Image (cartoon, rainbow, N blue to C red; front, side, top):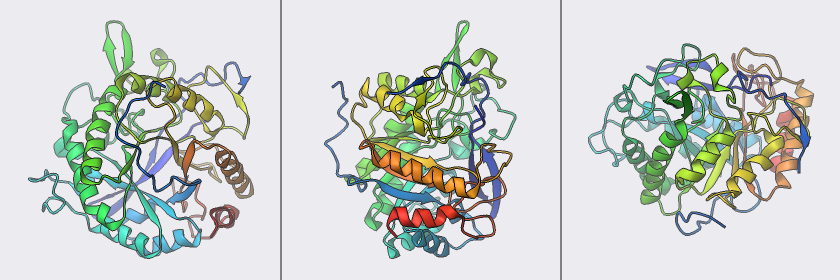
Length: 406
């Protein structure tokens, strides 16, 4: 299976740094055996009316929104021109809280720096666009120093991926964020990003005797439990998605080229583990990037869950406490050129066809309530934008406008 990656933008000390991210095919053994596809529920709290409850909410992510050399109002205006009514934004805990706050649940604590996100939320409100905040990134003061959190020694070796020493710190930040932004109309939250990969959460595995067993689901369940409590304590109308899983993992840990504790957990194994751990969530988020043409074929031995095998995800959800929960597709995109961090690409015209196919499939699936195209504009390391790096629209931009009803 070709590589599936994610590209993020980091703003540090006033400088934007571009990083290639996410999953390489590694040891997934994804080419084996293709076939054709075809209430024990944990009560978290009474059902909440989701902002995306009716139909499919269509959105876009624009990483440039948090770049210090860009203007949030201008970026949001470009999103509005696409017709979308939802924008996904990475709310970086490590950026907002570079120092430990004295009163961590109080958004007015002087350690917090919210200014950039205030501008984003205000720009969205002025244009009638909802914000979906994805909260992740462990600050240096909150990171564990456990030797098990070893360096990955490649592009995924990011300090914010070390697990929090105390998951309650993440929960306190979630409460502060919801306290600040619920009065401004933000009620959609995603707890962490791609916790089944070492870039965003380490360690991924722990050793038990001669075996390596998934550890990231247990760590993530603690983080999610704390964040869910924080969001909902501050905002009874908060709707919180958990999971946010990357599409691919390493099925054969023994042959994974990384240190074993940093191999990726497959989304199948991650959901299965969460079924036993039962952290609360209102929806399950997943990033089903494609690495093959649209198809109805499912490989039962695959280490991935892409858009064309979402039934695998919902089947695993329905086997446990997540039965019937909505699915949020919070990242999906197709590159239009080969870049180092995403080798699967199609022509701009075919990119548009992939967008049409994705929305056709998801509108026919009542479980899916949110669809976010990643991303709005290309940059040097990621090319799935609806606009190219110079800002010129690709054919998919006009298609998005038509599909989103703009």
